[in-house]
Image (cartoon, rainbow, N blue to C red; front, side, top):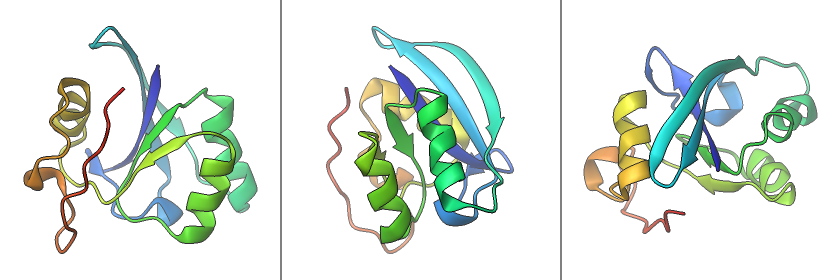
Length: 118
């Protein structure tokens, strides 16, 4: 499985729509494998979402996201885990261990949403 997380200053970017970088992580049997950073600064929203598809992302972990982008991403079969905040490595570890539902990873003002971890 491949997880993409929006990155801004080593934290989850607060808004996918304005994000310029992704951390791409391969996860197999609950173990984080190869990680790399990928630029997603594009003028076209379709190109930006296309990068998620091109890198083979199955899951997108992000802060806020507009309905426009969410619809484009979900149409490509990529699951979105929105309204997440925190240190990028802590959030990735929380995803892998099934703890991403904890309140400390939610954006301020966002209620807890149960996320099914794959």
